[in-house]
Length: 113
Length: 119
Image (cartoon, rainbow over all chains, first blue to last red; front, side):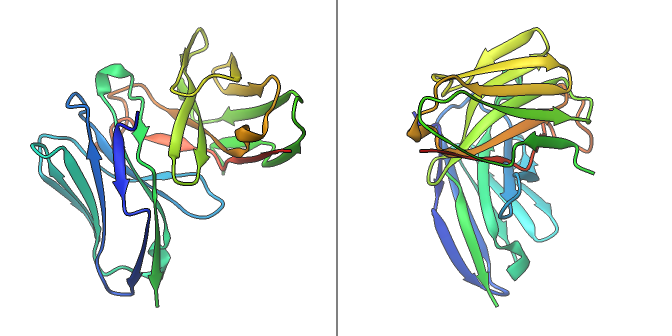
């Protein structure tokens, strides 16, 4: 069963544009929603995370928007740069379960110069 | 200054062979995880360990086994490799819940991965 569904699978954006990646989850007990960024040949690394008590979190050009009622959250990359080209994974977990992460399928982002 | 290291980085093996993937960490974390990554499927949890004596199955543990030799070492074994175990394998570590700094919650730190091909 896929508890976290991510879309799109791939995304091409022009430099300076906005990249948007969406995730939907099923388990209402999830209470931690991180986004991981993975460059080719590297392991994923935490980019930004949010808890369900807020609807938005911003760190630099990266913003998570969270809609608890719709069980959806999204990553927005403003002023996308070629250096942002990577694979992005959303994830979800319930802190009380030891922090096990359930990952989405991943989105391969390519930012064209 | 790699905090999480994996060996080997690449491995080609044949069906039926036993293979071990090793993970070491210098972060001092109690928790360690093994994932596999497949295109279109994301990262799926194979096994996880909260300390040396606490090992648990993840969502896709069939065909795999693990050993937590020390706090810093966590090995993944394929007893009899099969072609559909061809994948990218990642080890990760995390601190205990609530002890992650900067509001980053249960941040997991990943190794560089092992690309395994089973012929």
